[in-house]
Image (cartoon, rainbow, N blue to C red; front, side, top):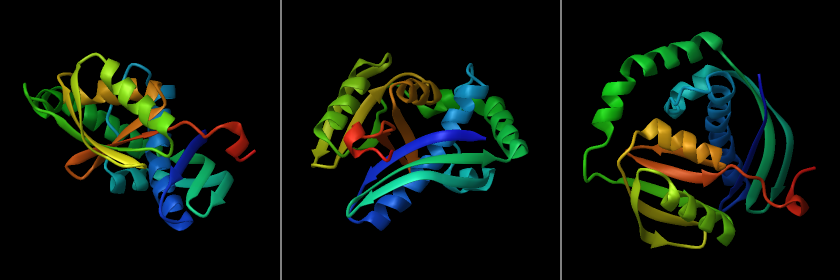
Length: 192
């Protein structure tokens, strides 16, 4: 059981924010599971369909919606055998995939999602100071998202783990990546 998985998403509607938040919460729960049970391991999160299959059930412990946002705290239960199978598979293929993932001169295309200027600054400053990140180029910028090109020379699982320690989640979105904050909004907006 992975409890107290906090998620906060802003979108065009409360329903869209809820859908995005639940998808994001699955990834956060998996990362929390790995961090708590396998602290020396840095596996990437599974693809969305695989991750959904790993979850036997989840409950929404607290939630708050506004016309354009959704904030919640959830508890997840995972299928141990599926999680262990994924981790074994990842360990068996981690070296080749880590080496083939990045080639010298490659860059990651990352979409940053945020709800406040402070969130955006946290994402950008965290990326810029991480070991292995040579350059962060802002391609497009809007009030709720930015497209970034990040020159990174390290291994992806380590990048995900370092970002997670800074309350940020890096998750796959097709061929590209999405980064967003795990932190709840200030207490006045929280769901307590």
